[in-house]
Length: 256
Image (cartoon, rainbow, N blue to C red; front, side):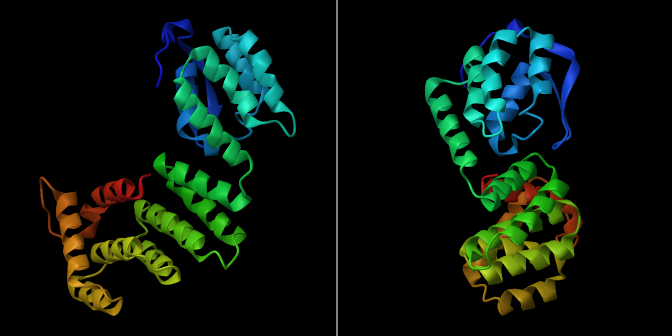
């Protein structure tokens, strides 16, 4: 990320509210960070005259908003909206900016279900678990039944969101549905972890045998559990104590 003088704009006492994610923005830097990290979440709060007015009134960026306005047309290219602000603030290096613009263009031409998936992933990474679950379900209702891998991915996001919302049994059921729909080694490991966290030891062992877990996979589950507990290992038969650490591991494993 490129360096720029934040003092050029500073912070405002009148934040801009992004309703879809429940976030108040107090500076241009915060807006740029959001745009860069979560391009899939660019919605009508961003494609808005209200945002341009905020940038002009609070930070004196009238000349920039004039150029950004080209991206507000009905069929406007998102890059036309975002690029003037990114360039004005030198927020990204040329290479980073080029990669980011390609991502925006991909989003502009993506199918509805793919956009929903990317939005759900971003919301999950922002810890907006209820919203991530809702979009995952909407994507499932939109995606063709033949796209088993895609549907399994959405079930996985929904399952992880429910785990975070303390809906452990429902989450384990969804992890199993995802695995049965499109079995992969990664999905089996996630299912085994969820089962270990939600079932008594004997029942977990029965279910692990039922889905064909081998010794190496069971060892990986034990290692993940131990890694999550790391410094202070509580009783593994109390899964609620492991929930937050497990979900941290899920973030790391999924790259979200």
